[in-house]
Amino acid sequence: MNMDFTPEEQKHFDEALFINRSVYGDDIDQTVYENKHYGNPYKLKEPFSISYEDDEPAGLSGFLGMRIVIDGEVYQAAQSMDVAVLKKFQGRGHFSKVMNKFEYSDNGCKVIFGLPNDMSFPRAVSIGYTSPVWLHHYMYFNAPFSFALGGNAFTKALDGLFQKFLWLKAPKADGDTVLTIYDGMDNVPVTDEEVARLYSDSHCHFLHDQKTYQWKQSYNPDLQFHWAVLRKKDGTLLGYALCHLRPRMKGNFVIIDDYAAAGNETDKRAVLKQLFASFKQFGNILEVPFVNSNVDGERLKALHFANACKFPYKLRGCPLAISPSCKNIEDMIRCNFRNIDSDVI
Image (cartoon, one colour):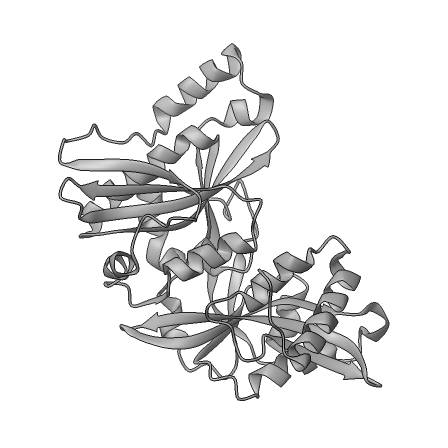
């Protein structure tokens, strides 16, 4: 994607890329970085907050523009990411400077949030961020022995025994529905109107549309995405799920990035069961990252997904940290959060 920068945008982009490469490594690809911040269909007027010391760029926070839907109304939102301070300027308050600079600017955002790590979370709290929700990772172990030890007759036999006790097996096709697998983002197999309909009973969620899906692919060019789409014979969409693969050890994690289903709770679970079961062909462990357990936890547990932030797995998870200007804390507690809403992909 060739960006047509204004002189000011070029200056800020060059400074942001310089700080990011200095802190996180020189392997950050310039084109991918451009796509991430300036290819965003909901790009903010200024996606970078930069602090200076003696006219030299010192600190940075990037902000991804997003759309959040609360009670059917669409608002501007922003996600803080890539917070970095050059080594020689660390300990001089630049984290607070870049965060507050955006917070108190004319940013037009109803919600500003972040997914801070262990180091940045205490700093975010110190400038007024709160975390009404802790997001969890849920996992379904399809073939754990083959994943850890490699596929052979012995590990397959062990996995077979394991699956007798924990099995995400889709019901047989009833003849009235069609499940189809699609690859990639070039042709998103669901329309914006269909996605909006599936999310229509959600009190709070981030807007998912074709422009967003294709933008995510543009700055994750090496990821292979797969869709599972379930429709009635007449074409009515019942549900969809989106995943990508992450190689680990002797197999693959199947990372479920987005999912939605129509109907009541029983219907939703039945549809998601078919969609998720179709992803087992791609890897050994299915993972749903950044789950708001207040909203989706019981549904995933009913499908034999385990909360991997609890014993014995004890993954950290992540706080959904909300800026001090946000007046929608109760809405965020009920937010349907998905991996595709994060800056991780």
